[in-house]
Image 1 (cartoon, rainbow, N blue to C red):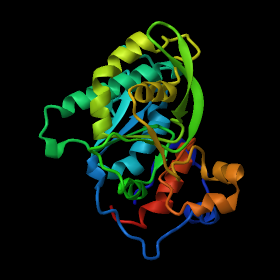
Image 2: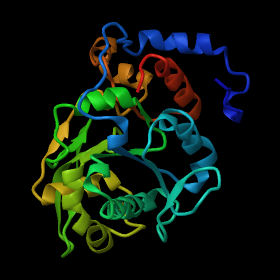
Image 3: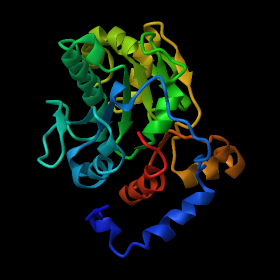
Image 4: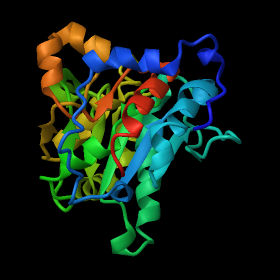
Length: 284
């Protein structure tokens, strides 16, 4: 496999030495491992929100690792980049606070395009992550097997408490699914959300310069829960790096999840390491 020519891998240790450190941090379930049966990778729309300042680093690393083996992927940003297939979401900005509008309008645009397609060719699931998230697609497919894409599922890996907003300006506290893991939406849920996405982000959620403007995970959860849908939490949609998860939960508990589906706060160099650690184990 051709080496990735990135500045951050200069003077990097030999890959074998680099990958060996993961053997004690990440489960390696290669014996009697079975492939997912219900869904295939092309059933999922992989949506990665990013920004111009991250195109040549985090977004490129994602493109050349796990995204290189999936069919349907969308990089959401407010401006194009010649070396990245960006889905341009106009008039959304490039800072952290712009993420909420970028995600809501980007999801709306992606679903709108699906409506003109034959039902058999449309996305069954939508995965939403930032460009510092590594996704193990074979593991994700297995986690989704018990769930029907025809039912409204809102899936994530962590939960918190945040502030929701009503159109009249009043607020209330609510649980939310942390976007620092991943958000997974069934096609049925996105169909239900579609009429509300632009209205909610334009008329209900606080505008930029408000302290809550960039909290896209809270905004999505507030909308979904307000429509009467529930959250589903799954293990292995990790909100930190392998080291961070061990630090938070301890080795024993962290390694109990044999097939984790995602890791967060992943540096571009570690994105390559994780991909090399996993890529030859399974056939998509």
